[in-house]
Length: 74
Image 1: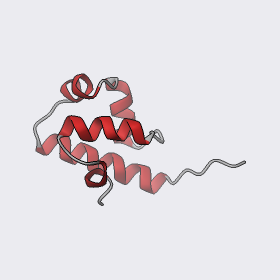
Image 2: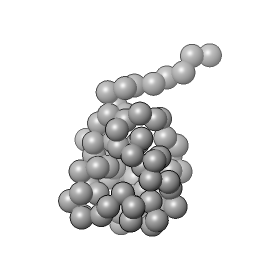
Image 3: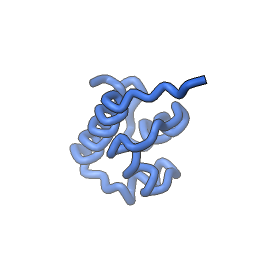
Image 4: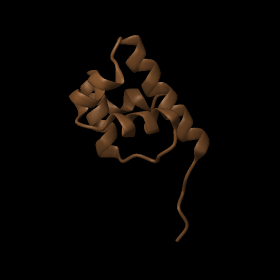
């Protein structure tokens, strides 16, 4: 079975999360703390380096006070 990985989509998702985080003036440290996700994982997601799980996206969305659908609306 081949892995499905859409680099363009992962980069767009990461860019969207970073834009929202910076608009809300939230540091990666604070997002890490609030979402219970490591800073290195958040950095990797924002750079589009990893294909993250829906549960991780939900934790990030909750920490940002948003719905998952708001993160993927790009």
